[in-house]
Image (cartoon, rainbow over all chains, first blue to last red; front, top):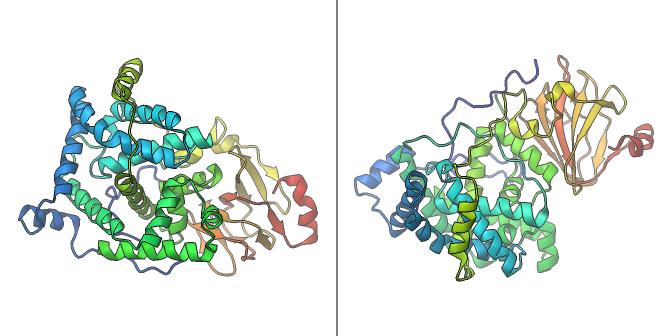
Length: 234
Length: 215
């Protein structure tokens, strides 16, 4: 029988740990990553006060609440709070990806309306609110600018669970905060290339043309940046 | 499923950034559907995108932006959007969506010689993707690559000079690579293969055949 081993819903727990379960890369020979604690231990540590809540955690808690309120009560006040914070970021991202201001404006409204309609699909154990909105904006941008489909991986299950595991939620928040801090601390040259890759809608060879850097330099800088990020996630 | 050959950082990052041609995205999404490790890695790359968007300078939205969005919402679907669940299929959902009605059994295979068959799937033109069926024990002729080629094994296995590739394994070949993949004995090997350039065969006959079979 064809693909008899293929199970559309893998039995393993949902995997969403950040940069920690990296496999040995064939190309870079990068080392597998390991965190000093498991997710549960980290969450417990935070509750015990060893890892105090940061302002980023508080903010992320607020955004998660907003999405929950939109889903549960169609709460326009919560939506307004999310809109005021994220809509300008989405519009900035879309403009840098090559949209005119007016197209980006229209598309941003569309992205935020999608957020409203899909609030029940948000899973705080799998992504931060900001990351989730980024993926919606990215998909819209591919539709509109590139006029292509972007095949998506098969969902692991039917939407998020009704009551996400709070320890997992906190662990993900913590990883997100550390990743943000690590990105902000990257050397400018490395950060610039990652930013171009995500925002400029540029392939590596197009970055080479735009920056005058040889392709090999670009690839090794991006590689260095990723290694640095992994190092700070340990 | 034991998977030994995974997506590279470069491919995952490009997929997350949304800059891959559709044909490559299909192979990446199909591999991730089969591979928990790469699914977790993709979540990390999406998180980088999210953090980048969060840290970058925003652009002011127009004054009536919020009101317009509320109007969009009230004009939109009344109920929450449900995810479409692809009916149980023998292949991962992203691939299933590119197959004709009836799935794999309904595919019209075309012979490309030496018992090897292919079916090209409809995608955007900046790259192409096909299903390849290689009879057990048969070698695909030595070929170099003008661009990048991704080959994902769906059924069976093949070996080349370097390695073995079984179900879920992804081979990434660039232009410097010349190899002769051989399907293992046992069952036919079925692969999903994407390329951004025509393959080039080193034997005389396949090269003549190339323009006609669309390889």
